[in-house]
Amino acid sequence: MLAVFYKEINIFFGSLIGYIVIGVFLVFSGIVVWVMQSTSVFEYKYASMESFFNLAPILFTFLIPAITMRSFSEENQQKTMELLFTKPISEWKLIFGKYFANLTLVIIAVLPTLIYYISIYQLGAPKGNIDGGAVFGSYIGLVLLAAVYVSIGLFSSSVTNNQVVAFVLTVVLVVIVQWGFYALSQLPTFWGVWDDFIQKFGIDYHYNSISKGLVDTRDIIYFLSVVAIFLVLTSYDIKAKKYK
Amino acid sequence: MSIKVNNLYKSFGDQVVLNDISFEANKSQILGFLGPNGAGKTTTMRIITGSLISDGGEVFVSGINVQDDPLEAKKKVGYLAEHNPLYGEMYVREFLGFVSDIYKISDKKNRIDEMIEKTGLTKEQNKKLKFLSKGYKQRVGLAQAMIHNPEVLILDEPTSGLDPNQLREIRTLIKEIGHDKTVIFSTHIMQEVQALCDRVIILNGGKIVADGSLSELDNYKSKNLKSVIVEFDSIIDSKMLKGIDSISNFEIITEYSFRLFGEDDKRMKREIFEFAKNNDKVLISVLSENVDIDSVFADLTR
Image 1 (cartoon, one colour):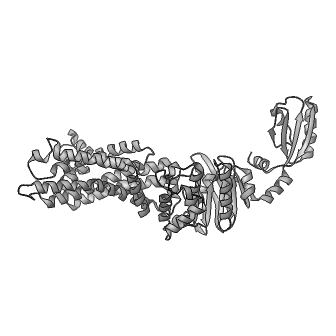
Image 2 (cartoon, chains in turn yellow, red):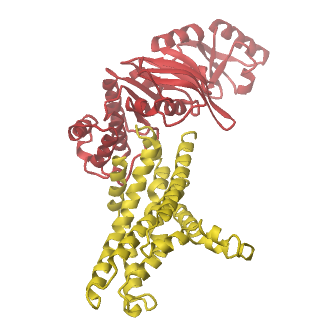
Image 3 (spheres, helix red, strand yellow):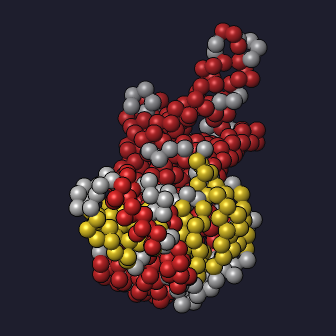
């Protein structure tokens, strides 16, 4: 598993695209927190990172597919999947190796945003007037959100040998799982009876509370279940390749 | 027994690719897999390496059942696939390092050095894989297949697309490896089989049509296959030759001349004279010929 993990990380940083993807993500998150009028800390006047965590799902919708799109589709395209199949490594080790490598890459991309916390901490009046515990909780929520998106990205990447298709499919699936259930629950048919139940299937419902720093085990179980579902789907797809 | 294959079946959709393949291979044996495209060579090899799952039958590598314990079996096998998949973005050493990590090779650095020297990659070792020429990529493919010192080495058309010098070098290498390992390799090239193999298996349409040493194949040809070259004075429609009973197969040399195959050369000669007489053609020459191994192959796989 570690061999695959290091290989993924090395290949990602071996190409320019990796740095560009992370760079673009940081530029946009910087704009959201510091520049854009409607979301900037300076306009908001409260020492809080709320705007960053609120917009994180949208930023992740584009950052994470860009990181995960190549993980399996490139192997499918280069036919290196067959090389891996002949090596003594189980499907699950392969999947976990790739999964944790991609998750690590996302965390590396997110890590520099800790500077925002330090900056806001310093800028607060009085200094340090920011709820550190809430921010910490929110970061846990962010990692869980990334964990779900990466599993969706890994699955999308396994079903195709085209990176662009993998990217688009991930975005579509992420949008459905993140906001689709909320949109569905707003249909008049579901009003009053089913709407709350349907909303609970969406990530949005669970991320809203966790992004405020409220870490609830029910939400953690939800996130881990979604990860498990997409990883199991990925494993089915990979096992199926051994019959073709 | 290094490899034991029992009653292997595989089909892709409606197409039956392997139909009851069984064979065994021993240590220090170089086994040649021959057959036309689509005969099932690659499919058989992929099943032995565990990268493809069969519909029926069993494969044992050093006594380990590939389907029951794939991870253990894979440790004993090195495989070079036909299209030689490599990570283009990786460097030669980095790639071999990755493969050694998968096999958990303890003395990684020395082993990589050894493989690089053995496969003649010293000059190219600091390049990215995508910048290597085909011959060198093939060497990297061989290096990754042998890095864990496997008991069984499976090479799918290892020499296709190489220049004559590279061809000679790779053949020498295979021969060297064959001293203490079981090597199975597939090829279309008959000369290669003659140069390298102790034993040949000829596949056609998913079945084994011949299995034996080269001398056994030689016997086969002297017993069962005769060849006669005939030349006429005018153009002959080759379809007409199919009407002659004793001819099992023929090759068109020119519009006037043909190489005929059959079991009984005397009868073939007699019938070709009759054929000429009946069709008002004039025969210029009729010559018996020694059958070469290419013709044996053509006869078995037609």
